[in-house]
Length: 369
Ligand SMILES: *Cc1c(COP(=O)(O)O)cnc(C)c1O
Image 1 (cartoon, rainbow, N blue to C red):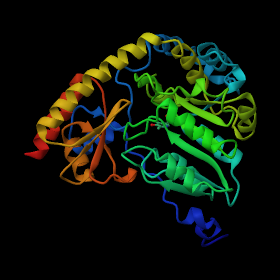
Image 2 (image 1 turned 60 degrees about the horizontal axis):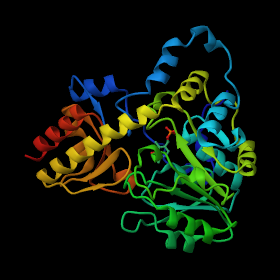
Image 3 (image 1 turned 45 degrees about the horizontal axis):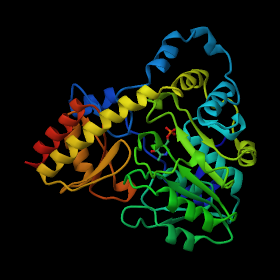
């Protein structure tokens, strides 16, 4: 019998010093704790309209008995649907358990001890986290004018840099590189490293000069594009996202990909969602209205904000973000605190239904008085 055991000393040093992410409690628990009877979730950039009607129908019709069967191990039909949608080959797509999982696939495929990745300091944190808990160096360059700084990223590259991660548009600042800037960057990186553009919010962007990474991969075979069904397509709860690249690139990354990590329900709903263009238009309309309303009301409240592309914006508060979180929760509004994104005293809010936006403004107003 072992009377005392500590896993700590068996852990690599880079795991010993790594702190686990604390997920938020389920809504009913939070509502009990904060004493609110309804809750607007504005913390995760989810789509208030839910999944497209086509995908909702698939979910309603799913035969329960089919849950007993393993799904397609390589999302066969979804890759076909994506190929048709984007005029590519099915072998140019790799589907994962959320875009989060494909981040791991790429890092595992390309990086070994001593290698590094380059990204920004104030962006989606999962690139940095996966690198660090894989024992790799994450080189973080400060944002410049709230956007990724291409010069700084190139300057931090060395012979051990395997991947550069660009979040385009950036979560949480909403800035993006236009086509010319991205191409210039890709030209300068050349074939020395993999460039990832995380386009989790691509479907929200209406600007003409926004570069659709999928249209650049013929010219740049070292480019990998991430997309997700969690944001625009309202399937966050089912966990499904994908990457796209040149056939050779996808063939390389596939070696570290876990078969069966994407469930059957998610695959079938995503196939239906791929063609849902009406849903994109209706969601954009909701976001446009919500954004216009928030800009006006935040200005009236005297609160500075950072707002760009995507279904979110950031607000700077005269109080700590964690205090604001608690106060807003008592009024049934859940926001994202931004200290963990290295933006202390900012909150990020999802742009959602008018009802939710009005609840947010009312709650902010009463917090400030
Ligand atoms: C939400 C998000 C993702 C991950 O989405 P999944 O739910 O894992 O598909 C990836 N990148 C960015 C920038 C995001 O905001």
